[in-house]
Length: 374
Ligand SMILES: *Cc1c(COP(=O)(O)O)cnc(C)c1O
Image (cartoon, rainbow, N blue to C red; front, side):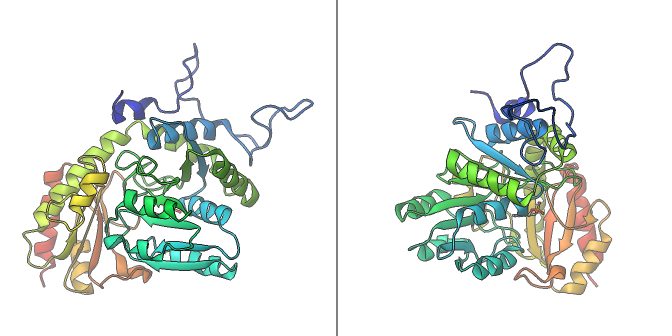
């Protein structure tokens, strides 16, 4: 059994061929030579692409190392999320979403409801979605949730959903497949934005859905072809190239996040500090059971007294960019309430730890906190 780091550097690579590159370059093609019957694997660029094939194999190996899985790559995380929801749900179905999930879920909810799909929501914390499962067709889980960093018991929720005949999908964006394997925990789909920690350089938008079952995979693939939410070959190739360093990045960023969270525990102006890797965090015990050891993600969230204080803090940072998104090699932080989409206090900071040396990053943050005090 190889380790995750070893698997990640070779995941999805074709068999070695003399004088060919280990990872073939991106194939840019709208159509392929197609004499006679359309029997080959590549025909038209909205249906299939060899660069996707390699990337999808790679992600499948990471999400499901022990059993074959089908992965469908998309142009963005939202394209993947909506592909699973809209390919699986029909008018009259009920779906359970997290109340505290990604900020576009309310827009998704409105769209689902306009198609006559009943949408129920419940918070991630305390496995509260359990109470909404009766008669549901699909349960959507986000754990750890973004940006609140609550965690739910995926195995417990999946078992309860399956007992009621519901499918289970987990948004695995924050953890990445190296931090958590939803399919091993009983989920039917692991879905993620590859824009964040998976690719990690802040230069690619991408998404994917992975499942072990052929029929839902076919439905998701048909959805992609129908709406045309296809990943670009260049993005797919960049994403695949980035996977070779995923284990390094995940380990370093998680270690930095833990160092930062630990340093923040001593600050009187910091409240609501959350990081699943922090031993005192309310989610830690559960996260330690279902996430991979030492890989609790790169996000730390906390609250400063008010909006002005948070803005002074962000301005005083020198090693950290004020930017949205998370999971990149360069640390970023933002005052999340500026978007208006999340139920968070005005001084709420979502901090994404990059691959800087943790001691430098912690020193910069503590200095900026001092500077932000009036
Ligand atoms: C960013 C994000 C998404 C959306 O991904 P895009 O690639 O921006 O479309 C979905 N879920 C979570 C948890 C995210 O953080």
